[in-house]
Image (cartoon, rainbow, N blue to C red; front, side, top):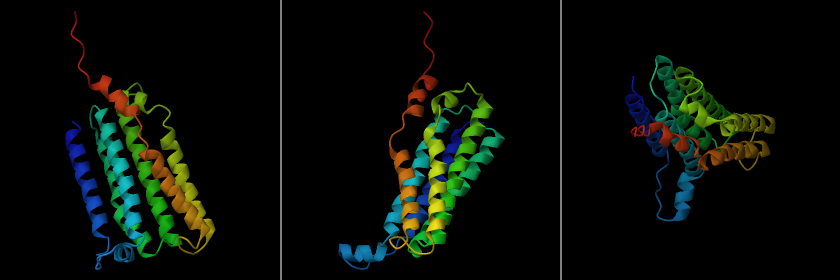
Length: 211
């Protein structure tokens, strides 16, 4: 099975996720920045963080499937698992925002991030196994230090929120640290990573004509 249908379906789901998140922002009734701050509050920042995460997954998903030769049943189900985890972002983002970044919602948001990271890793592993350890995707990923650091960062954020006790952002150091961990993990993925882009060109270029 070719990858085009899976990619199109995934793109559509991710677009819907982003649309749902932006619709959760409160309507601004005033005409100045103070009214915007009062209406949106932390919601705009929450939306921005989750939007960045969805964008990161979309970009990496796109690059990964440029080096995927075929889609197996295992790849289909692993991809659906990833989309399921990402589809929870609108709910966990809104819950965290409505509670002013209270302890439990912040922990659940971190668990959501961790689940999405693990689902992406499983999808990546299933693709590599279906193509062989010498596949272009396996060579492009290399040591994958970002993929190894991210779950550690999410777990650190979850533990910080658990240890910090009850409170909200700005009133609980543990929650402040947790949010900082989530932001930091997004930041390392926003920095351009050329591993797969570099591998795409030789992998997709037609063979040279024999002389």
